[in-house]
Amino acid sequence: MHEYYHAEERQPPRPPRPPFQQPGQGFGPPFGPPSGTPGGAPGASSGPPSGPPPAFTPQQSQSQGVGVFAVDPGAIRPCTFRYVFIWLNTGERFWAWLVFVGPRSAAGWRWTGFRWIYFGVDLRNIESFVCF
Image 1 (tube, rainbow, N blue to C red):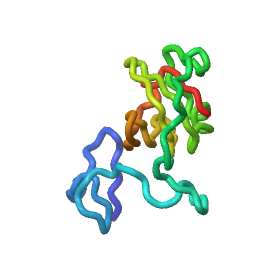
Image 2 (image 1 turned 120 degrees about the vertical axis):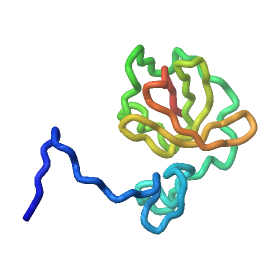
Image 3 (image 1 turned 180 degrees about the vertical axis):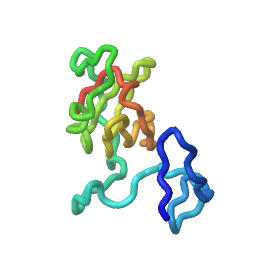
């Protein structure tokens, strides 16, 4: 006999599973620097660039302003695997090398002034950006 549940009815209990655990993996969050090649592109690397970003700071007037709305993923996706200067709505600004753009977030490498560090950002937090 099959049991059917409606949204308002109580759902059957699920067996417990440790958070963020995939079959064959230990404990830990499912994020961090990516491994392998992005999108299966042969020879492409998802690590940081081999050197620093351009030595200048672009003017925000060169960027694509977005107002109160989030950056559209389709607008920033062409900036993957290119240098991109990002202005956040918190006032922070920095050079980045994006390796992933999803529907609500982007991730990649952020230049600290001395080295590249891996980071992620919610697209709603990006005020504007310009890629080179």
